[in-house]
Length: 231
Image (cartoon, rainbow, N blue to C red; front, side, top):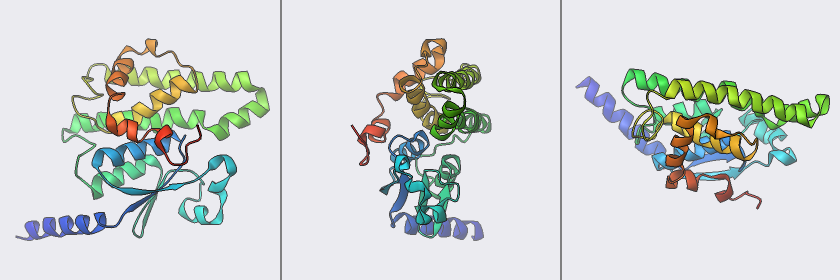
């Protein structure tokens, strides 16, 4: 009975929290923000979009600094809870809003999804951040800055290709969209459109992206569909 009561309490808390709309501080071209928008769309969670124009330095405002002292988007606000960093946000959403899970129950596949997400979150995206590349461009020039980004993106994509090739089906770890896909789809778009990465070097990832492109949740969360998008 105690276990049943605890489960009921968690369910009631989740239902109560979901009645108040989530706030997402986002920038339309941020791939990290795109991951969160994609996840929210997959889980069917409504949210209020709070644009933060990082090209104008709005992330350095005192109000935003209180949300994230590192001045990065995205930031998710759920009532009194504030979570920054896309990896942490997705973990929070998975725990708080378990509908439409983004992590499989199988321990091996769960670990694989976390590994793939971590490769992108820690070893690819931080090495092509606008602030870093701008700094490199000022120090060593634009060609070297681009070459640095391309080298590290390809290194990370090669690792993902090797990690996922024996598990991928329609999606990265099977026939359902999970966290690996949520991180991977935006990263592939950024890699090809901003950094001219030739995806033919990564046949597994290229095949996965063909499946991603037809997902309505990915399209709805894409940069061009956001209220702060500049066309």
